[in-house]
Amino acid sequence: MTQDTWSIGELAARTGLPVKTIRYYSDSGLLPVAARSSGGHRRYGPEAWERIRLIRRLRALDTPIATITQVVTGERTLDELVSSELGAVQERLTELRWREATLKALDDCAGEERLRRLEILSRVQRLPEAQRTLTDHWHRQLSAAMPERRLDIMIAMLAPAPPQDPVPAKALAYAELHLLIATPSFTRWTQDYEEEMRDGPAFYAEIDEAAALTAAALAQGLPPGAGPAVDAFASAHARARRESDTPAFRAYLHGLVSRSSGFDPRLERYWSRVGTVTGGRVLNMTVAHRWLTDGLSLSITGAASDTPRS
Image (tube, rainbow, N blue to C red):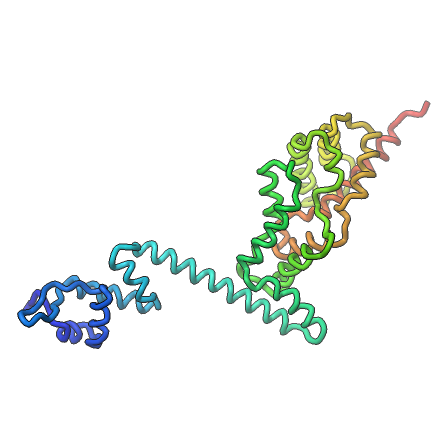
């Protein structure tokens, strides 16, 4: 026999839930009441039955009652709930993986080295804050003359996101980035000789080609020397200063870049750690800087040897 409504006891018997649980759901606004009996008792219709099925499924996923209430009342859709919960789980998994990598890094050593690692790793246990610290540092340090697009590229290179599934070596490397930027007088890659530029925007427009050519040459394992990458590099600096790309200018530029912060050992270590964090996906700018400087020197030597004697 079919009936349209059920008492709280009947609904409990049909669903297998305790009466007190159904009463709690009802009092919380989760279950709609279809009608009242002559004695004023609540009676529940098919909608309540379907609602209980949804609640039980969501509770099986450990969804809080407050969140379930938002879904059944229409404040949030089921799609929004799934997306939000998935994001929260992924964030928690990232935190747990990071903690695991941290503990493994500490378990892999002892004594003074363990204390050293503990001091470094303690800087980055709150990953969102750690990432903001890194990003904010480079926003303050990079040249204000840098075009926005190139600034975004440089920030992405200098402030890599913490690895989602870190091994101890990557966790240590990411933490050491924070240790290095906290070092007093830590230098920056945007070099001191930028101050002499008369046309910064032109420099940044031209230097992109030099960077791309250098990255390609390094990827191919080519030795430094005269060629398109060095030509683009020298041309960018010459045009930025409204000079001609002559052997004399290259000699001047070589002296300038040789003294620049690109060879700071702390910065070299920084780029090395960026490479560890990213798995080598980011160009090591100190390696590129040295490659270009050596190539610039060789281009000057080659130009001098090609000059006919009088």
